[in-house]
Image (cartoon, rainbow, N blue to C red; front, side, top):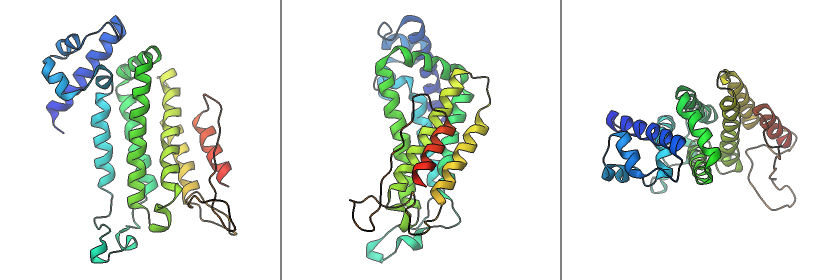
Length: 254
């Protein structure tokens, strides 16, 4: 990632959101965005595929930062069947993968807070343009996939091939988004302590050992049979806060 690329993306995002907010999404042309961002039309399409994509261009760079951050804590050794190397020997017990995923999610939250005016304008724009809400879902899913892939590669064998990688990644994203929505409604609140507390709740649930033959959040999915594992689903009301999310996940897994 270069400083020029980062600057160009930031310019394009700010220019696009300002134009969309002032003129309307459909009424704004690519040429107008390129002119406002001080780039050529060819450069625009080389770096951004569409008007929808440019609204989230800063997240393309942020996602790269998240992947790099997580990669730095991956064990250097990899499964090598030809060398007969095991997953256990590759796992670094000094690394807490759950904590690292939460750190990565905090990076995303801090990005939104640090770019307050852009974040607020984008949020207002998303309420008006359904296509952008769809694009936001795609962006959110990409973070979730990155977290899941990291957990699968980094957790020890008994946990990595289980629903825990998927469940924990999804829970972290859900809690992050719930706290972020609260902040977007009142951007003068300091909600980072709430985010930290909710993440701590999720980590406690994920790390809890099995007892009395019960299941934990890290166990595999399976069809019902004697000694089978189970999948649980938490249903929350729209607008549920991070405490509600964390409590619901904890309750259904206990």
